[in-house]
Length: 329
Image 1 (cartoon, rainbow, N blue to C red):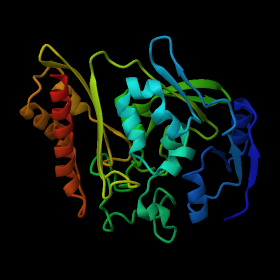
Image 2: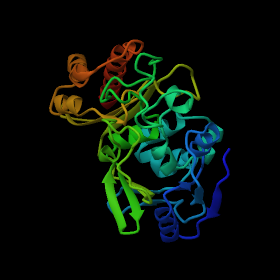
Image 3: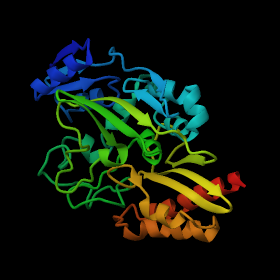
Image 4: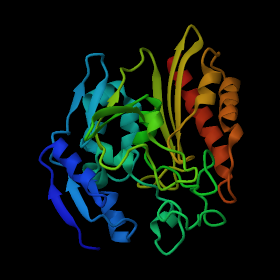
């Protein structure tokens, strides 16, 4: 590992000012992703500003019934939190489906949101990768593409976002709160991540020096049913081939609200807006669910080696919706 400077932040604004002033500085919290990449040579920050001791580790109920989740809340603690388990069970299940118990004990809410792709070429510094080294090419195109994107990719990058938690939070309409030297700003999670386009090295809309301080969840919808379903190559400690986060409300035998996000299929958690539009106001039938899945997947562009994801996504999405509808009866 290349030498670097380390300091432990004592206040939020001081941490933000330090990183903003140094283009080679990075924030460090759990370190479960960043430190791995430093060891691999994927990234080489000159300074780490440790924010793990800042007062950002609480989960607080908001006046409207929502939740404010501090940036350094550990994934294990968030999954086990009473209000998360009772009001947002989909989020708890998503958290528990990610990584291993040991990693969840260290990983933080903000770090989970900001973890980078697990594309094998991104992590292998001997291969071209536009995300790691802009302008060098995309080795996944024509290479090993089993885990690559089928939606929203570009000729410059076909990597997928690895987080389970972010998929559930996207379906829940979460908002990310960030601090910069200019103050706070709030970014809906659905707008937080970028598609690769011609600059896949940028994963989010954050600028250098902006620190994620919290994530806010709106109050849960009354009478809704939710689920997080993940398909992966082995039972644990594996990233999603495809995942579905869905929240469905059925009133008077019709769907009054459908919120859906997909994981493992795109450069960001994929909000299934076409499926939602088709479902809202519809009678919850097997045919409706299949048609909604087909609508969402009408623009897929699979690669040689990951065509199976199209059928898999369609089936997992339809099965998840069917299960929620049966629960609601």
